[in-house]
Length: 102
Image (cartoon, rainbow, N blue to C red):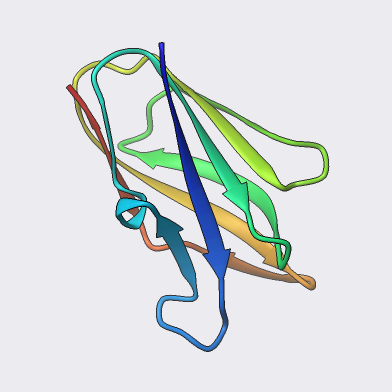
């Protein structure tokens, strides 16, 4: 199982306000993988989903909201993922990012 880590940042003064690194959050995986999304200290995670919806992307949000860990057992294809965050009581959704499952 290959593991990936994506750092997620929030800055209300930029467009889009939610950014991803490395590779703008785009991920290519070739086998069942765990993808960990680390939050900067300015926000907490509240949700994660893929488009098209796929139950093979399980996810867990850490109790303190600073991590989202996904378990990918999806079939080959391209999926978009979106993450919802909370910043001081205000909710924001990221722009969709890409997961390529080969």
